[in-house]
Length: 182
Image (cartoon, rainbow, N blue to C red; front, side, top):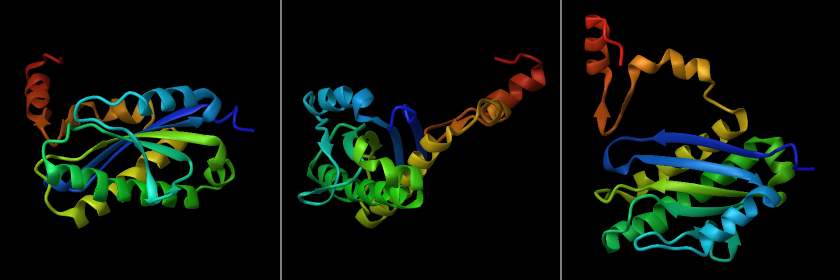
């Protein structure tokens, strides 16, 4: 029943400042993504310990979701925000995404997901980290389900390239003005 689902990938960003959340999600049938899920779970590295996302101890979310931190844990506070507030946000966001999608509701027991989650080492507000990860996880799953964004949308936004760490818009505008598209 899930063969047509395949493997889908989504991305979303929510919030501002150090408490912002960035979640990349890979979701797919256990028969296609299960081996990758298991390998990632069994292959922790320094500062990165993948674990199954839970709503509470003993109750993993469905689809089973592997939480993988993108930022190496730098201290106890960062670890607590990552494994606590961010993980809880991803759990609620995934659960909300399943509740909002009849496709996911029907297939959740047969799918697995891997969530790569950014928690800034400078974050301090657990409530904001939690809230932003709910939105980012939910929206990344929605993007995976819809296949968004479409290539035409990406092409239309080329000159608006920016992220929280770098703003390319002034450089691209200067290049366009000079007639030197990169």
